Amino acid sequence: MVQHDTFTISRHLDVPPGEVFAAFADTGTRRRWFRLPGSGASYEHDFRVGGGETARSTFTGLDTAPERLEYRSRYIDIADTRRIVFGYEAVVDGELRWTSLVTVRFEGEAGGTRLDWTEQVAFLRYTGDGSTDLAHLRGGSVLRLNGLDAALRP
Image (cartoon, rainbow, N blue to C red; front, side):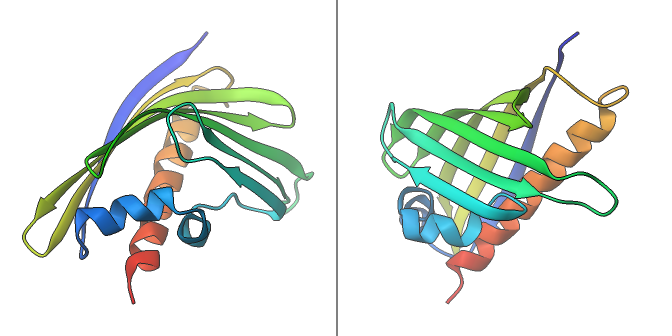
C-alpha cells in the first residue's frame, strides 16, 4: 500500500528573493545548508530544468546498522527568482522509500522573502502505520530550512 500526504512549511527570511533563490542555485552555497546525515557524503548538482542533484552518504545511528542513503532529484520548472519545482526520490539501502514533488515559492515581503515549501509525498515503504515516517520527513524539511536561514545570515 502507498501512503500519500501533502504539507507546506512557510518561512520569512531576512534577505531579498534573489538571494534566497541563489542559495538553491549556487552549488557552493547549497552545500552549506543541504546535506544528508551521516559520513562519507558525495554530491553532484546541476541547477537547470532537466538537471538535478544526487547525494549519497552512510548514516550510523545508535544501536543500528549503518544505512546507505541516496537522494536523487530532477528540476522540473525554474521560474527566475519566483519558483522552483522538483521531484526527488529517497533511497535507503538500495530500496526506494518515498518520492516527492516539491514546489518552492519565493515572494518579496517587508524586510525580506516569504518562502513556501510545499511537498507532496508518496511513501512506498514505511514503518508501522507510516506516521513516524511522515513526522521524520517533515522534521527533516524544517531542519533543512533552518540550515538555509543560517546559510543566508552574514
